[in-house]
Length: 130
Ligand code: ASC
Image 1 (cartoon, rainbow, N blue to C red):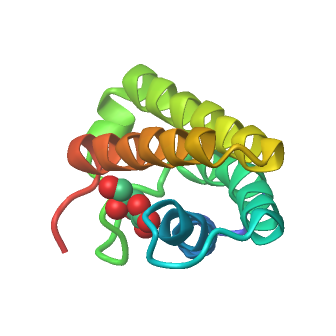
Image 2: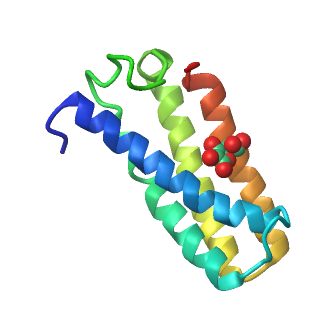
């Protein structure tokens, strides 16, 4: 899928940053910073759901090297734990998509908070300092 480890690193970083951009549009509505717009929330949450499935495969062999990324050695040393964290993030993103599509604002707020915690817990365990 990737021509070089560097290409895989760029790919996963791109997927995470586009996912963050779309998640933040939904999160700003959930937090009352932006007005709630059910259609925009659904469209953005659908992108988050799809994008969440992309990064995992880009953490393959050799993609731990270099200084262009912040993935800690634990990604590869504790690979089962990392896979579980990734699976949880993907599941929580699907729940966000379902909540947004339901049009239930309270459900959306809960799903934003759950996915936000899932992002943060993976950063705490698997992302190093810049
Ligand atoms: C975001 C984003 C993250 C998470 C995290 C939640 O919007 O870009 O990485 O939420 O900050 O704690």
